[in-house]
Image (tube, one colour):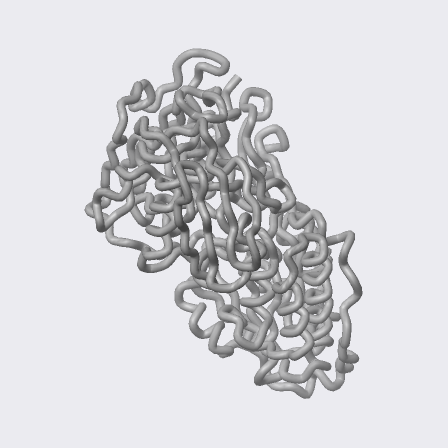
Length: 511
């Protein structure tokens, strides 16, 4: 299960020990090794509580890559703006050459944290290693990249099939560029001291803590904080308490239940790319009938979920793509081909339906209870199943539930909803919990995939959204907001990123 749809589950790679210590490969001042915060204003070290401890020894090829990105350690050839468009990072510029080839010009002023210079050969080495990694990074699951150096500063990248989203794809943290020293151990890629970001990973103390030091040679200008002392705190209430007592300056992912207790000065909410939806099994059971799916859709009261479950800290469902996808609202069209909803008397004649969700996201079981009540009011007989996600995914994908509530990141790995639409709603989709197979949907998604122009592709994606919503295969419930914790009277420069890739930046500081 990808992090983009549910971060709490991680695929564990072998660790040498629970208290693994990753040393930095370059000399740096370790003023933060005790976790203290000396100095004042911009001289003060940051103290950060992260929600998800390392599970893969900080490998760039799994979920730990997102942690490295959120802590401003690693970078790729590109980065994403708030609209999900690619902009220069380690590549100063790029151009397309035909359908399957691109040329990227490498930035001349970038140096790795171990002192070696960034060049085209380093980019090729990193991209080739990612392509050969096992398991392969999720961002490469639907494509094959071949990178070659053409001189010291030009990288040519070809893809097996036409890929208009390649610049966005290269912004994924799993395709970060590292120096040669990162690959010396054939069994494990080591980013510590071998990346290019504003902060250098100096130590990782197992699943407990990490120490970052400022990279004084960062091409974008020195970070304003001298370092970052990181604690990995899985318990959301504990993260909130650490923020309340000023044990940390920044707390990642404050639970909704704690947000109102902390108050507006310590919590900062913003739209996310996540849509929480009710997937209905279109292949078998009660919801194989489009009229019954339409009845379920009419039963759902999104505002009641926002007010009751999310305490006002979510947005009512508008479609598959919410406020965290800022261009979607202006391009949205009405759903097409919807069936007429079955009357309550017809609904009451149906067999019991199984409504499932998982415990890993604390709001979902409560949401399931409210949805059950709404469906029962319409006439459905409902049985709930609630377990850990790891115990449910295989059954959900096999269509063993009539209805399944999930939180889904609609921008996934390329910051474009195309991969989400294809994986979740097409006949051959790899994550098609609804079991939907509709020619109109497949045709619309295929058309979007063929378009290189961003505006045209977005319009085509919204046509696909209209077809999917018209099938009532998925009933949007709410659009989540992220809640990050920090004291806005003393902490500056925290990134509120709906795509979850940035949190700490070169500008983040205390004072």
